[in-house]
Length: 155
Picture 1 (cartoon, rainbow, N blue to C red):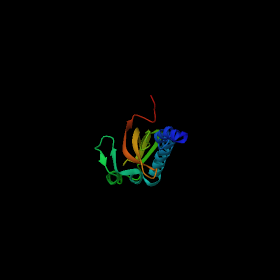
Picture 2: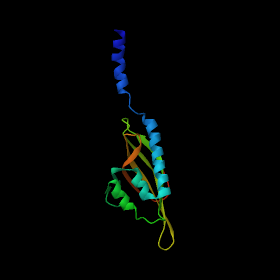
Picture 3: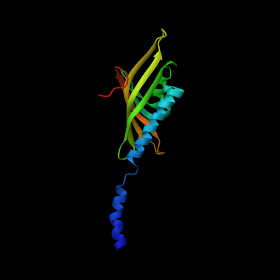
Picture 4: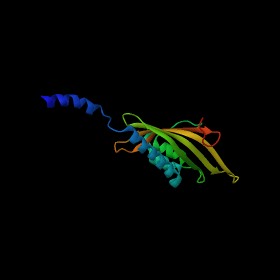
């Protein structure tokens, strides 16, 4: 009888335990964003977005209409000149208690050489919403960013 009572008390406590540890998943998510940024530098922005976007992901480019779907995002980025470099660094990652959604934000720098041979840079911040996949990896569900007047600043 004692064993049955103990199980009746213990079972709800076990069932209420989260399936994932949000802090541990946030660390994995931060690494996923860093890996995403590294791939953009290695293989270009378009290929990185094609690799890290969900098939139904959506991008909200600064000043432009939303772009829906992994392939459409890739198509919108594939003709960017080779000298265009998008570099970003995540500042923070958080994951929901359920462990299936998370977000990262950080700062980016876009660098390129214009048609006159002049080096140009623009700065901004971004917010990316991620969805945890059945295998535990993270892919981008939604991504947006907007410009800053200068490099990284916190107010």
